[in-house]
Amino acid sequence: MKVLIIGNGGREHAIGRKLAASPQKPTLIFAPGNPGMEALGSCFSVAAEDFRGLLSLAQSQKADLTIVGPEQPLVGGLADLFLANGLKIFGPDRAAAALEGSKAFSKDFMSRHGIPTARYRTFRALEPARAHLREVGAPIVIKASGLAGGKGAVVCMTLPEAESAIQSMLGPKAVFGAAGSEVVMEEFMEGEEASLFALTDGTSFVLLPTAQDHKRIGDGDTGPNTGGMGAYAPAPLMTPALLEEASRTIVAPTLDGMRREGAPYTGILYVGLMITPQGPKVVEYNCRFGDPETQVILPILQEDLLELILASVEGGLDRIKVAPTKEWAAVVVMASRGYPGPYETGIPISGLDQVQALANSHAIHAGTKRMQEKLVTAGGRVLGMVGQGPTLEEAIAAAYAGTAKAEFPGAQFRKDIGKKGLARL
Ligand code: AMP
Ligand code: GLY
Image (cartoon, rainbow, N blue to C red; front, side, top):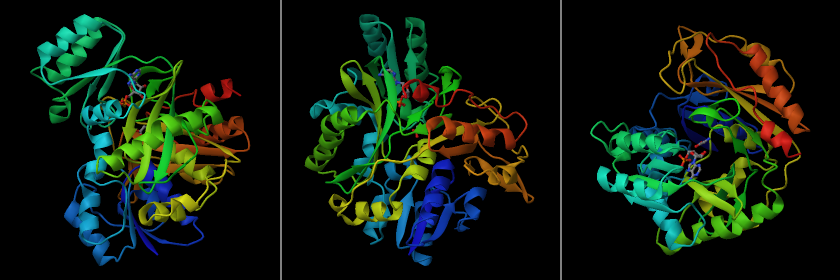
């Protein structure tokens, strides 16, 4: 079987690595891929935004299955194009991907179906938004409705912060363009976050291992939000009772609701959860695997990912069970100096051969590229150092052992990945 994986980040490298270990021994191809994926299969320089190019690649390479890593192509309708051409693709179509593509849609959807989430109002103009702010006060969370690369949500603890967030989205110098022309203002939820992944064929679903991300740039969850600076799995916060509650009050009604609204959801539904004193509530939906969470949930998943994905695409997930994990995993993201602000690229990376020599650690490539045969940085999040072990402590130690070997000038990473998990054990 030939499988095409679309994307060029850590998530897609982790998916490729897991599929390469499948007993079905698929042939893997990537578009566009990155240097980490070159070891797993052929990379074709077709961008994830080039829908026609991707379609003709899948056709000319006779891909039996395409797996879409990032959200933009799904929100833009890549699955619709592939399905219309009779090709198998893993990921929701455009109508279903709106759960991530439009926060205004997803909040209204949750409200229609009684799915627990923060109270909210949606605004398209500055003055009504400011009037609402004066009425409800801070803390408050201000979000650009459209896709903003994980940077569209601003948690505002004070009124002036909220005022400037609204200005930056709806004011004359809007920073998110069309993505921010509609703004969701929502109640601040107290609690700890967890990432929940449901793999679904539209009707049945299985839950993959839970994970906890570390969104802020700084230790102790300080500083600005990032795409995610590290993760570990499973998340002890998600007890069996909480998992059952989240399945019953969130995942099942979400899939039922989408089906009843004529937009059945297939693929991975990633639910960002806040565990509040009133129970689990939805922070956001994503229509794809999480990054960096995928780097830790896949290594400890005992099932064949390819079998799960095929069951999602073809139906029949009701026959599949996902066993509780036996191991732990942690990933520490090594990011460029300056990230999540402006950063330089093209910085030489070394030491990955030494990471490879470690027993329980491996390196995932996120933002890397080759320049004249040399491996250099090519993004904000550059590498994911993944560790596995029989305890969370050992997994974390194995991840940090990787960060001690891999190197690039200016590399920054958090020193407290997994601490919250350890505190719960
Ligand atoms: P989002 O882009 O919606 O996932 O938001 C990014 C991050 O902002 C989340 O992971 C949370 O840490 C935080 N956040 C978003 N919405 C809320 C909320 N209503 N209450 C508290 N924190 C939030
Ligand atoms: N780790 C957060 C995300 O993938 O959106």
